[in-house]
Each structure stands twice: as C-alpha cells, then as structure tokens.
Amino acid sequence: MPRRLPFFLLTLSLLATLSGLAAFADPAGESDASTTPAVDAEVARGKYLVTVMACADCHTPKGKDAQPIPGMELAGHPADMPLPVWRREMFQDNILATIDMSFTAFAGPFGVAVAGNLTPDPETGIGNKTADELIQSWRTGMHWKEDRIVLPPMPIEAYSHLTDEDIRAIFAYLMTLPPVHNAAPKSVMTTMPGHS
Ligand code: HEC
Image (cartoon, protein in one colour):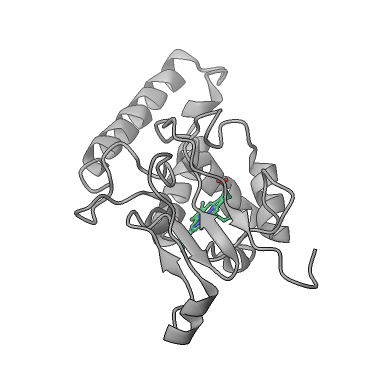
C-alpha cells in the first residue's frame, strides 16, 4: 500500500483538476457525477475511514515478507492460499483462534472466517452491491451476501455505530479501488449446539 499511495494521490489531484476544468466546460453542471466536488469529498472521507479503521489489516493479503502483496490491495484472502486450521483441543493450550500466513483468514470456535474481496470486481468483489446493503449489514450484523451473521474478527459491532454518511463514504471509496479478480473462499460458520 505505501508504494501505491503517491500514485493514487496523483490520480486524485489529477481528477480534482479535471473536475475543475469540467466545471468550466460544463457550466450547467451536467458533467458526470463521479467528478463533482461533493463526490470527491465523500471518497476522500471514505479513504480516511478505511485507513484509520484498518480494513487493510485483515482484507489485504500479506506475503512471506509480511508486506501487502502488490496489486492485491483490499482484495481479500487469495483464492489459492490455504486456510488456517483450529481444533477444539487447542483450548487446552490457551489458543482461541489461528490466523493464516496472509492474515486474511481466521479459524476458531466460530468456524473459519475469510476476509472477502472489497474491490469493485462485479464477480468476486463488491461491484454488484450497494451502499444501502452495506448499511443494512452493519446495522444488523447480518452478512450482505449470505443468510447468516458476520463472524469474528470482523469488527461489525463496532462498525454498527457509524453514521449512514460514513458507511456511504466507505462504500464510495471502495468502489474507486482498482477491481481485482480474486474469489476469496467462503467462510464456514460452526453451527453451535442449541443454535440454528
Ligand atoms: C480484524 C480483521 C478485520 C478488519 C479490521 C476488517 N474486517 Fe471486514 N471482514 C473480516 C473477516 C474475517 C470477514 C469474514 C466474516 C464472515 O465471513 O462472516 C470480513 C467480512 C467483511 C465483509 C463482508 C464479506 C464480503 O466479502 O463482502 C465486508 C463488506 C467487510 N468485511 C468490510 C470491511 C471494511 C470496509 C473494513 C474496514 C472499515 C473491514 N471490513 C475491517 C475481517 C476484518
């Protein structure tokens, strides 16, 4: 991510300049909505929130050097990377959960939780989702693609306290990421005795 940042900022400022020019060329204000100052501000707010809320810690896969894998920013657990294993006996050694090498998949009493692809790829990412669906998911704790709760360690309870505007900003920023085609494996939830 750090190596990509300057380029991204350059793109942003270029976009800002272009939208400034567009305002001259299009005084009626009919230019593409994606270049208006209001949208730029929303995306900037979203980028700030995604940064401080550490989405990349779990959704950007890390390589053997523990650095983010280039070109995989927020693209979720790599499709070909093994998932971590956890066994109930591990409780005896005080091990609550295990994490895979890329820090994108987590195994524990809840099952195996795999951090998904947050880039706008329509097939494997969030390209077909909407901000309203993200708000609904974070308010209820329910997954937005599957009929079940969202598993730990996704901090969904903490994120449920965000305002609608902030969740919209996060979604708007994620939709500006370069789409990465990566089908992160599905999470598997443990069905607890006595729970459906
Ligand atoms: C501590 C690790 C962690 C952090 C931090 C985190 N996530 Fe997650 N996230 C996960 C895991 C693990 C899952 C899979 C949960 C499941 O399948 O039930 C997940 C699932 C999701 C999902 C639903 C699954 C999907 O693929 O669409 C979305 C959306 C999501 N996270 C967005 C975010 C965003 C946006 C941020 C930052 C604002 C964030 N997450 C921060 C670990 C994390």
